[in-house]
Amino acid sequence: MEAVSLNANGLRAALRKGLDAWLDAENPDLVFVQEVKWNDEAALRAALPGWNVVASLAHKPGYSGVIILGRGKGDSAPVPPLPRGLEGEGRYVAQCVAGVTWLNLYLPSGSQGAGRQALKLEALELLGQWLDGQSGPTVVGGDWNLAPTAADVHDPRRLDGQPGFTPEERAWFAAMAERGWVDAYRTKQPQSADVYSWWSMRSDARARNKGWRIDHWVTNAPERVEAVSYDALARFSDHAPLRLRWS
Image (cartoon, rainbow, N blue to C red):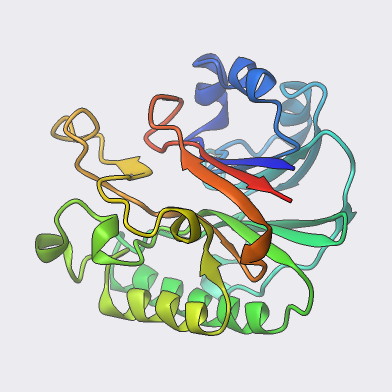
C-alpha cells in the first residue's frame, strides 16, 4: 500500500502547479492533504475527480483544513479531541482502511504567539491520550509542525526554543516513542541528515536547504513500514510530499 502526505499551503494553488498530474503518476492508495484553505466542499470534490474525499474543513475561509483522498471508500474513524480554541479549524480527519486507522493531522505552528503555542501543547497532550487508547495498527501522518531532534532542523542551536523546536515538544515526541509510537522515517533512515520537509519562503531557504523536518508518518506498527521518503523536487508548496510504503 502506498500513501502520500502533503501540506499544500492552498490546494487550489497546488493543483495549478500540477499536483493532480503528479498524483496520477504516483498512483498512491491514500493521500493526506493539510492546509487545504478551501471550505467549499462541493467545489473541492469537483476538482478531484476519481478520488473519494473525506474532509474536515475550517469554518474560516482560506484557512487550514485537512482531507484524505482514497481510490476506494474506507470506514469512518474517530479523531482525537481538540482544545476549544482549535475547534472548527479543520485539524484532524481519519479513516479505517483494511483494519488500519489512518489519521491525517495538521497541528498549529504555535508561531503566532504564546497563546497559540499553549493551545498546541494542549493539543499534543490530548493527542497523546488518543494514541494511548489505540489498540490496533494506526498510522498518523501530516504536518506536525514539530521537529523531533536536532538532526531535523538546519541550525539546532539557534532555533532551540522556537515553536516547533521547543524542549517541551521534543520531550513529548520522545515520550510517545518510548510508548511505541515511532517516527517511520527514522526506522529506515536513522542516521540521515540535511533531509527536511519545510523551508521558509524567506532568504532563499529552499535553495540553500535551510529547512525543518516537521512532516511525519508515525505508527505503532513499525514492522509494517517498508519505505519512507521525502520528494524535495516536487514543488507544489513550501513543503515536500512525504511517501510511505506500507505492508
